[in-house]
Length: 201
Image 1 (cartoon, rainbow, N blue to C red):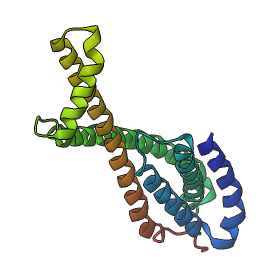
Image 2: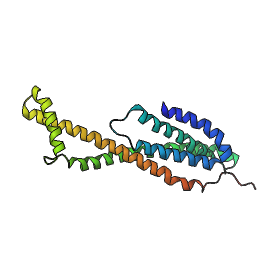
Image 3: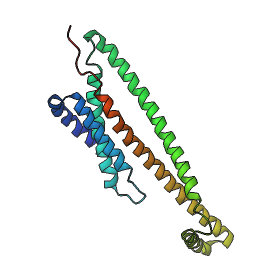
Image 4: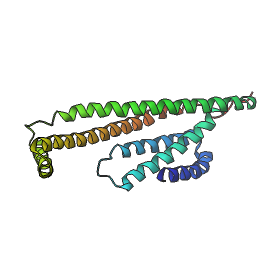
């Protein structure tokens, strides 16, 4: 819902601002908002509330429409009228292919970053780490009344490993969102290389 609300607000804002500030500036505003949304998602944790998810989603929805709608117009602005139909078809094809590639890249990044952080954090699960020992003993104590000590210990270790995987996956998402924010920012200078209008003969 917040992302849909952001898209709705951006639709109205884009229609009002684009004629006044130009298509390129509208795209830049959208990319800056996308950057802010990515950075906001880069601050999430396992204790977040709905508002912590809602605001970044609102920013992403707003920024996506502000960036994509003018970009769609400017990408066909220099073409002749008879070329518009073919250009629209190619544009939709590239949009779908780009979305598929982007989803694959994001999924791969989340998986790889999660594995990296899991490898980094598992080094802390040793008997020399007092926090780990205290947490392990606390879980053992909670499981011990219902089973034998060996099984309780194994269940406690499994529980801690599950928490570690949750945190590693969270860091995978955080890293991916931060790279998304950086990518949105890096694209901005290239926007000004585009031509807004077709030159008249």
